[in-house]
Amino acid sequence: MLAAYDLFTTWNSDQSTSQKIQDTGNIAGGMGGAALGAAIGTAILPGVGTIIGGLLGGLGGELAGGELSQKLSTYLDINVKDDRTEVKARGDAAQHTDISGSTMLAH
Image (cartoon, rainbow, N blue to C red; front, side, top):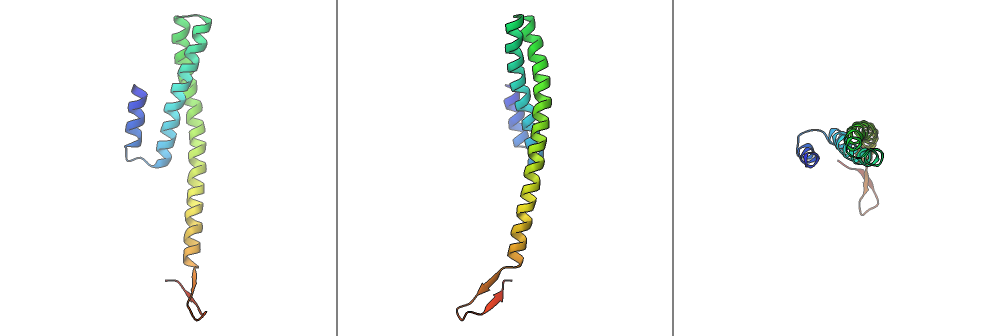
């Protein structure tokens, strides 16, 4: 429940999309890690192992999810900036041809 609230508040905040991606990775990684850790802990020592495995898995998952989402965010940010620069460059250099075949620069 808390993770769903965290995701809701993250995506409805004024943070940059890059930061939202990183926060989402932390949250999702923590959730997945906690579930996996709890399952492993339960298989080893039900009860106590479930709690310890869930805590350790959640911590490890949050760290791993944060690292992966940071790389994804950086990759997307670079590509979006490159795409915007390319589109602007194409727009600045665009030429149009009129009916007579003459070329004129776009304004």
